[in-house]
Length: 234
Length: 63
Image (cartoon, rainbow over the protein chains, first blue to last red):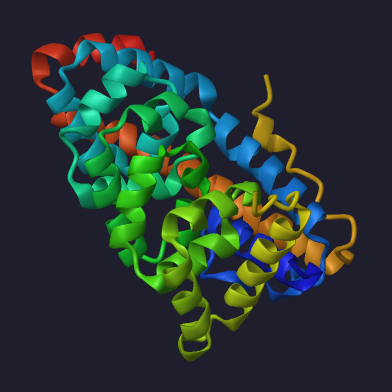
């Protein structure tokens, strides 16, 4: 990945975290090294997640007093996606999954867009695969590709395949560009398959995603280069 | 104890001071938005909690 692309991908993630309108709001950071932007984003993520932690923990404790369907109503109609996302990692994972079963897909998509999956791994991995696919489709429709890129590392292959089948080539290119843990790209694109990957790369220019396609091609080629050659024949 | 947010993270070192201040302002705004949302949403939440449980929830929250 070129340094410029890497910076732009980081700027996109930072803009999302700060609630800004896309990477254009932060054009002045495009020339800043990606590692500096990554460190800053990590520090802001910590800041936002650790703020008012005591109150959030008390809210999570109070949630034990209420049935799951009441909590879902409270979550969807009063707390909203951001606060529910902050609470998710503080709840017992089984309870969180139970509550999520009462949320609408649209709300779960908005909640997931605010969630740091690293803080709620057990919840993310316990969600039924079909529901994750539905959420992924709703997130893609809302343009939440940055947030989707955070989840890939936490999904099993069957769920990933379900998502890949439902998402468009454009979605896949956008997610790949901002994926957290790029080392997972090879595996994801093995699941996508060679034919679709080639079609995706070929069609990227026509949808204005040349940089994303170039980055993906670059990454897949570099990884292939690093792998030891397989012996053939015999 | 001061809230952790009272000290914003240092902006990327390669950013000039004007841009660094702009980025910090965005971060501060995101933090304020989150705090405002938390404060108002907890108040709103009580309207959806069945009244016999409101007292217990209020006590658990320390509200």
